[in-house]
Length: 154
Image (cartoon, rainbow, N blue to C red; front, side, top):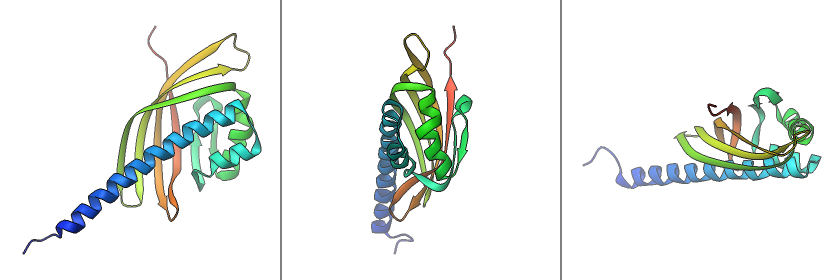
């Protein structure tokens, strides 16, 4: 007899891969939702994006501020972040996702094309995300999302 059930191991591996794919999709939904909030800001768009987070989530957008809890995150997406940019396209790459049961960590790079308020033309921003996630009964949610802006050397 073997010490482990091969079917259980396969099931666990498939579940892990499904979780990684779901987290990758969640990040893509976040990027698309962020673009909607910046291009056509509004309360409904912000609520839809904030639903990707847990009720007590923490976000840190560096120079744009930190926000805790869904109400503050809605305010960030409806008012604060659209106050900085009028248009954006988020491109998220290089995922490193680690799943541990119903919790996960993820890091991604981003390239962000944006039109910043008051700027004469488009800007390109670079950086990375450091995320913590939890698996709710209805799917994965961000419990923490930290944005780290980077600047290429000149």
